[in-house]
Image (tube, rainbow, N blue to C red):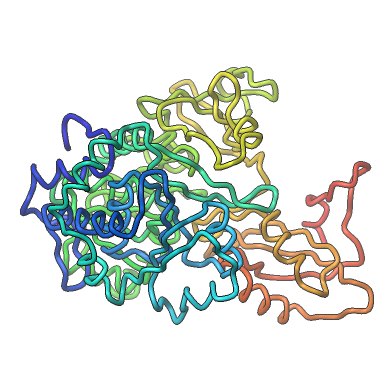
Length: 512
C-alpha cells in the first residue's frame, strides 16, 4: 500500500503512477490501463476542464455506469479542486434534475445510452441554469481529452499544489428521510484513512483482480472500490451492472481474487454453481453486508466459492467504514454481526439521550472519528440533527454491542428498507407517488422478499372521483422514479390508520 498515505485522491493516483507505472490498474473489456496511463489521462482531462473554465470549488456531476472514463473524470474533477457529484444511474429526469440544481453542477459527464436509456433526453425538460455543458463518456471522449493542453499542462501542476486533505472531494446523495435526498459532503482527508484501514482489514493487495460490481456512484464502489485500488495497487475490473454469467466469465478469464457485494450476489453465484460448476480457484477475499447474512451462506461462500477471507462490514454514505469483521473470525460472528469499530473510529450504543448503554443492551449506533462526513450540503439543521455537539454521528440504526465490541444491527430507527443493496426511504417514494393525479394519500413500507431482501409495498387512498389500478401505478412509478424505489405491490385502502397526532401507523398497515 502507498506509504505515506497521500493527502488527496489525485495525489494518490500520482504516487501510484510513480510507484507502479507499468502495472495494470483497470481492466475493462479489451482495454488495460496502467497506473501511469491512468494518471496521464486524468491530467489531460483536468487540463480540458480548466480550459472550459472549471475551477476549484465547482461541482461536476457524473451520471453513468461503472467504466474507466468514470474514474478519469472523477480524478480530473478532484485534481482541479472541484467536487464530484454522483448520480444514481437508476434515477429519472426529475430526480436527477433536482440534484443538479441543488449542487449547481456546472458540467455533467454522462453516456449516450445505458440499458436503452438516453440520460440527456431525461433531462430535456429540466430547468438547469447552472449546467453549461454535458460531456459524453462513450462518444467523443478522446476529443474531450484533447481539448486542453494535455497531461503536461502546468495549470494542472498549479491546481495540485492547492488541493489538500480539507478539500471537498465528493458529494454523494442519500435517500431522504423527509422526501428529499441529502447531499453528503466528504473531504479527501476523511476518505483516504478509511480506505487504508479497509484495505488492511480485507487484505486487498498489489496486483489482485478486484471485480467492482458495486456502482461507482455509491460510496462502496467508489471509495473502497477504485480509490482503494489506487492505494493498494490492486486492479479494478468494473462491471456496468451485475450480470451473473458475465461475472462468472470475468472470474474465470481474469482470475478475479476479490469480490464484494450484497448477499444476493453470492446467492446468485452459488445458484449458478449448483447448475454448472465453474472455476473459483482464484477467489480469495470479499465483503458483504447491507442485509441479514445467514450463517449457512457464509459457510457456502467459503467452502463452495472458495472465498476464505469473507467478512461482513458496516458503513454508510455519512461514514464510509464504521465497523468490520476480521478474516479468521468465526462464521457465526461474521454472519450475525457487522464487526467491531475500525481503527480511527469510536462506536457506542446509546440511549435516547445519547448516553452509552451497558454492553448487550439495545440502543442507537453512534460513531465518531476521522471518517464522519463534513455535513449535509446547504442543510445545517439536518447536519446538527445527525452530528451532535460532541461529534457523534447518529446513524439511525439500532443495535447491540458484545463484550468484544462487535456490533449487531437489530432494527432501524430511521424509516427505511434495503432493496437489492440500495437504501430506500419510504418518505421519498411517498413524495414521488403523491404526484400521481389519482393519489390522495399514500404510505409505503418494506416487506420481506427472497431475492431482493426487502421490497416496497404501497397503501394508497385515491382522490374522490378518480380510479386507477395496481398495474397502472407500477407502470407510472417506473417512469418517475429509480426502479429500486418502485413498490412491488399496491393496496388500495379507504384511509390510513393514524395515531392521535396524525402520524401514520405503519405497523398496523402491515397487517392489512
